[in-house]
Image (cartoon, rainbow, N blue to C red):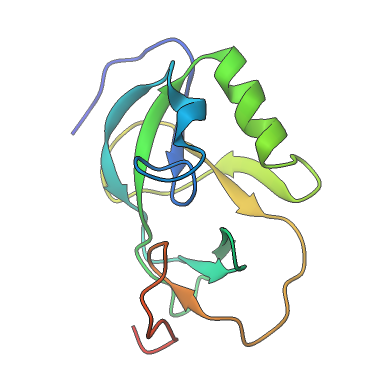
Length: 131
């Protein structure tokens, strides 16, 4: 699917910003563009109350999420929530569908080895590297 160029930034959300999740209200001024999946070169790491998106080129998953068109004010709110550039960094992400240039929040801090990983959040009870 090819979308027309619009003002603002397209953002892929995969955790607490998705519809039905606790921080979704921050996207009240944004435009929903559709559900999406990444190329299978990433994983979500279970950090407890929220996930962290990480590059995982070998044995990665096609992470599930949503794409939103956000204005500069909303982008500033999201950057503050995600503590950019300390806790997360915002950068381009590769999606399976053609939404044009899309950015996502990647976890920017070390995490302990052995945490569960998955292709979605909240993570299934049996999340592991077996997917």
